[in-house]
Image 1: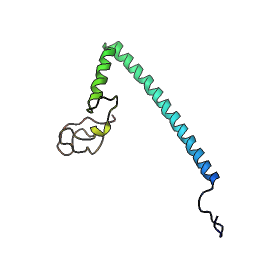
Image 2: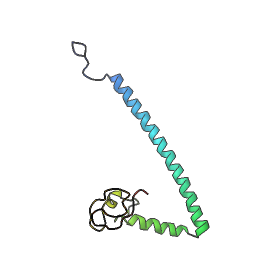
Image 3: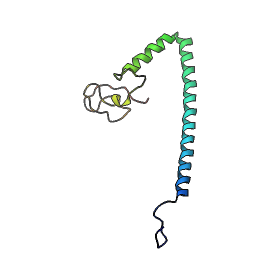
Length: 115
């Protein structure tokens, strides 16, 4: 504490309270994300069941489609690199929006991202 009554910064108690609050928020966020993942897993399972029953797709069909999708970004790593999809495959310029249906620079057709 400075002689005129001002502190140099927050007290250790204040820092501790802020840290605890941040930790609670992080736990809540993780719990929310886990719930969303469970919901998506359930919906995806139901959709796959419908595709198999009504359209005759097989688990092998799904595995092949997953492998094709994985390879689209140039790396077979079990992930989709959104960064590589942000560039136009024809001219290499960065797309202006994720929903673009064509490149704003060269007019090449694009697949909307996140749709």
